[in-house]
Amino acid sequence: MAATAGRKTTKAVEPRGGQGLSIVVPCYNEANGLPHFHEQLSAAARALTQKRGLHCEVVYIDDGSKDATFTVARALPAQSLDVQVVSLSRNFGKEAALMAGLQHARHEAVVFMDGDGQHPTTLIDTLVGHWLDDGYDVVYTAKAHRESESWLRRFGVKSFYALINWRSRHKIPEDAGDFRLLSPRAANALRQMPERNRFFKGLASWIGFKQLRVDYEPEQRAHGKTSWNFASLIGLSIEGLTSFSVAPLRFASMLGIIMATVAFIFGVMILYETIFYGKSVPGYPSVMVGVMVLGGVQLIMIGIVGEYIGKILSEQKARPIYFVAEHIVKSAGPRNPAASRKRGSR
Ligand code: UDP
Ligand code: MG
Image 1 (tube, protein in one colour):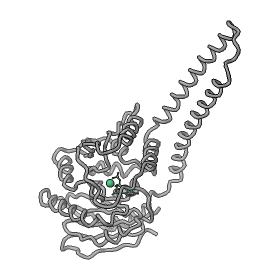
Image 2 (cartoon, protein in one colour):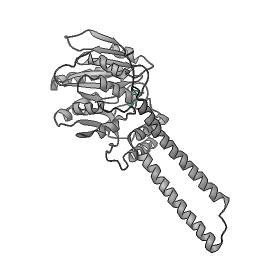
Image 3 (cartoon, protein in one colour):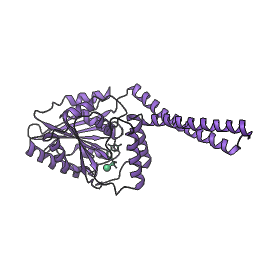
Image 4 (cartoon, helix red, strand yellow):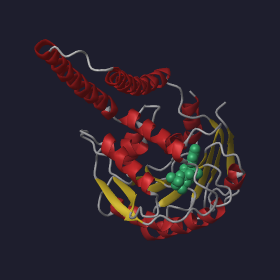
């Protein structure tokens, strides 16, 4: 299994002693902004080492970028923190990239953050503080304001969380982003989740432990543009919903029950009118409307069921979540300045 082969290459590099932190950064076409991001991250890591004695490493996951992300990431200096660059064999999507980072991380505690400069590196210290000083296991961030987003997007986000949390025992916090810190036991719990259809925001909330929300103001993207458009956001929402919740199925059953009840009452009324008043069957339009509404609802419900069958199929095939093409490890400090390079996992 290539994903595990990728893991093997990682295991060859021994974790260091002492407490440490692995910062996982998924990158898709981020070549332009990466050097500046790395500078900021190195400064944050230096401060963490001085203040708390934490060894830091960054794990850049090049998620099949079409630009020079891998070349740029490979040249980044390992000063103040170790650098790993894992290049995936193609674009597998952010969730798979995060999983690759989680599996390659050499330290037990992990931070997930974007490589586009939107997640402030200065916040890492706050997240670490809540973990080390206050004992939280999952410290997740949420956007303090959403005013800059269109009403359509805000409405979409609201509806998504309303549906995914509907009658669910494990509420996924609204507005939570992927920028988060995972304590050693939380990171381990996430590594144990075997599913292929991953939705980290949901999984990180599902595992439990002590969780804390931290509000922050996201920065503007430093370079390039977001890889999400309206269609892909809808795709992600369907993915998140169906891989994490059975709410749509429940919704389908409820709707079915309501429709059947209305149809039954309607049938009784028609029978009553025919028997007692001798009225003939109402006209063609009402029949057509009924047929079309029912047909539409049935098609939607078949689609929902189909989404779940698709999920079962892909879980059943149990394919690896990603393949590693190249893996580079650079260690900071005078002990081992040379970079070691490993060819991918065949
Ligand atoms: N990303 C990725 N694979 C993808 C799409 C995005 O690794 O297929 C990375 C991207 O480089 C960035 C992060 O995921 O670091 C968030 O992506 P983006 O900025 O496009 O999303 P947004 O911030 O708009 O939600
Ligand atoms: Mg972004």
